[in-house]
Length: 463
Image (cartoon, rainbow, N blue to C red; front, top):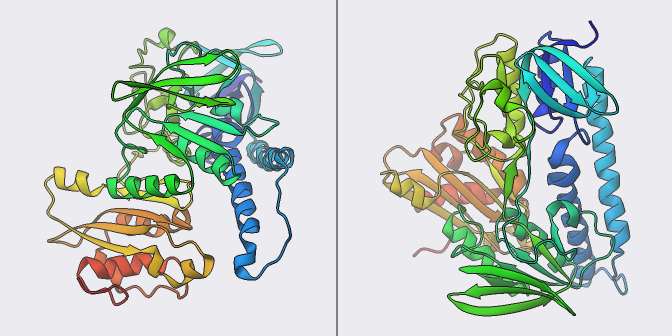
């Protein structure tokens, strides 16, 4: 039968399409149901397009400051339409690449909305209604931007991260509700393009969950670049009369910020409603589907991966979960390990973290030793003119075990992989210290911080 599959994946995002490919590689007949576009939020409305905008804004800043390096280019301007066109071009190329890989693995792509009738039957509403018979199901429906109950939020001047990416003109003044990862990345984009940006964050510091030393340092950097940041602040309404005004309270005092547009960036909610979970007897908790370490739900043969599980809402975690779920759907016995998960934030400088913060390590009863090294003392960073930031390695004093690494530096997101591998292999900080790092590179700061754990850093003044 043409509509009978061993495994059907609902959702073609970074979790879903990877799960489909792995299931096919393991010999299963596979279908992917995707309502919108292959690649999901990450490729079409998240990771990739935002990084394209960030790179364009970075190139603009580099061009503007070129005279400091002896490069004379005249007056530098940017064309926002071309920035958006470049983003769209990258997304389209990657999306076609994913579609090719999926089809190359003999997987059927079915366009439409998947609705689970029972654990072996899925109804697809697309151009035509069709019924899929399947041995197993992998739910990979992802998430969407959250919208809080703020009066005035339905104005056309209020955007979420999806709609902001479709802008054709660049706002002169942007207010961002939310100082988490999405908020600070978009703040970086528009600030780098010379625009007026304000962040309003409910918590006492931006980037909650990031090591406090890193978050306070990046906050100072963002403020120095001209971004206004209000913390411990709650937005009460958005008024769009003659001007758009964001009304908020800071410590009980009402304030207003006038702007062209408001971006709501307070997190994401799972896409678990309207997919037929009730027909399986599955009851999501706050919208999230509960799974075990094999990514299987309480219904045998039905798996869930990615944002909809609420485990760690990151694209690379969704992909890792997809590999595990697919293997188990194929009869393997693999378990998901969340002990080493990197987090990346594309501010300027970048932030990359893995493992516990210093506060978390102490709270868990560890006696810690911390090594630090400033980016300002790194030769390559000095050459690049990017000398803000630091690296911080948190270790167990008795064993030298690496408990966490937190980097605020240029190319931090490319360097964190070294520390992920070190933690995965249970390396000690001494082994990092004894590993010769190439010079001149920004990656030397890792070795220097490892030396500093024992107070033996050659390029750092004695206390």
